[in-house]
Length: 274
Image (tube, rainbow, N blue to C red):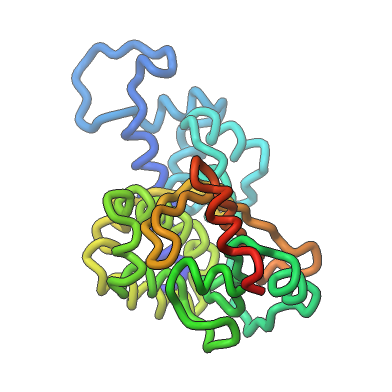
């Protein structure tokens, strides 16, 4: 399947799936009558969005051209899309096609990472490669020391038992968010061989493959609160803080800020690891 065919298929499945989850009564429409498929019909979405049925059909099948941001906003409101889902729709409709490049962590960020941060933190690139991390991250997660070879965090989560096992009962919900984030970024790299190779590798995981079929989408910079059982500090609850670089859209700095009753104790143990 070519890149354009793949984009159209992804757009069609995404919009059909979002139509199917909305009941007519949820948007003020009568619910009576038999329906062949669950959710809203195309004509109902078109009416709610204020566009013609023919145009909406072309939009859903990926054949519409020159789609304005105003129309995308209208369709997003009609389908009650989340911010991440709207971002996904914008990328698919605009035929966004990015390519990843080799990235070296910025010197200034490396100084902050290693000299100023006591919380676990790392630098991640578009294809989910962790190219630098600090001593606190290495200590809490029980991984290689800073300066070791980069690794792909998705491959590590889904294909290495060590990282997955630290999440315990929280793994399913955490994994679902990760796959939703990856789906959005993958849809913006359909012509990127690196991304497609990564997707093929991740599908070797049964967990990933099942979650991929759900077609969930999550904003790539969304924050979340996670709890793991660290091999060094015990129960560790943290909130994710994603910081984008103002001068580079190819990488981000991710902090895991301790939260909960044990946060102060964890911070005390991490101080001085730099």
